[in-house]
Length: 316
Image (tube, rainbow, N blue to C red; front, side):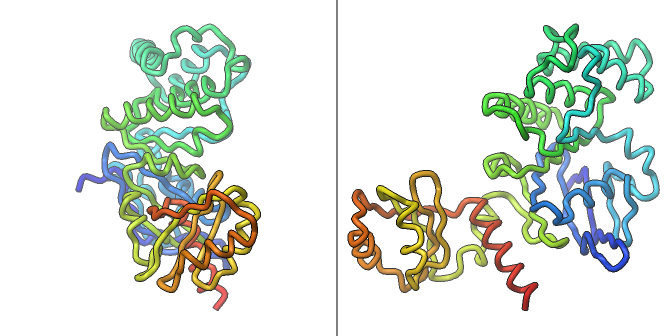
């Protein structure tokens, strides 16, 4: 396997606090890798160590075959980073921002102008080159930030919640761009809280309380036996008022988990589940149009189930 990122037993302690606890994973070259976890789980600490900004207490991380602890300066030449918060210069034009970051990376003038021309075409920035960054919409600001992160032709891109705060059309357009970049062999490491974006990734990792709880393709994670134990299954319940039905359905002994998904309820039920009993309960509540169908767990179901299991084990 040709790995762009190789992390082995990565650990970071701050005094008595273990922020990252023996985390291991690999990211194939040219893949889109999703890295998820709640705030405070250790996500940012892992990313900072891979980027060479923070030394690990133990373990190792390699980027493009280089040890990040031993060659941090070379590592930074080979990666691009785009933060969640727009951090470019609002009073400069799009072109001035791109030229500024190209100079920061030491690109010679001819290389700099060629690269800016390529990025302007690739990212659709050409009509906006003379506009100040401050007047751009959220989606175009993200494209500009992506251009600044790519100006030195990095082999790996780190994107911290790149679609936070932008509209659905801009989100889709940005992901179309990421797929095109992946097709060119650029490895993309994405942190996100959006489950639909995690579904788009080649592989996904989930970290909670400093430990890696899940690693695999979205399909592999949904098929885990600890997400759907033997005898359990997932159901979608349609009814007139899911909000009113939620608490009574949750109270049924066979229901392991229940949550609202839009206009339906999403249930995990055990082998003792009896649909007729649930229908009778809903009839007593005056619910109409009741229907059940088997469904597969989503990534949200996966992460919620694993988080609850880990939290219970941590309290024991």
